[in-house]
Image (cartoon, rainbow, N blue to C red):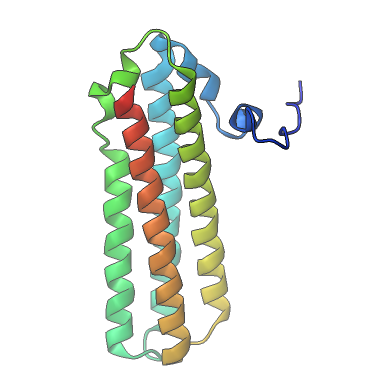
Length: 171
């Protein structure tokens, strides 16, 4: 069954988008929440590892043609991305009230879904940014612009990961 188009007023907009996030319906059942959360985190983690590989490939491609200080900054962004991937992989969410609550509150489910959708959009945005970087040059101005935009995207991803953790903690 195809979900209804989003209501223009925004009511139940997230419910209409729930089909985009695998396992969302499983969050409603207490017995499946940990499994669904683990599955989602594994999916995000795998995607982050792919992004780390893409950034390494970019860095390798710019080796020898980019200023050493800018290559060092790219390496720092790789460390930030690795830290985010570790945070997803080793999430301490097991003790969150969300996993214990019966039944799950709709506002909590909406906040989790919203965060998940934003996280997937962030991951897609990072992949597109890396693809754009692949087409760019290693000129200092170009790399600095690449790094500024990468910093924005990493901040967004971190904020959305925190948003998700807060929603889980609020139960």
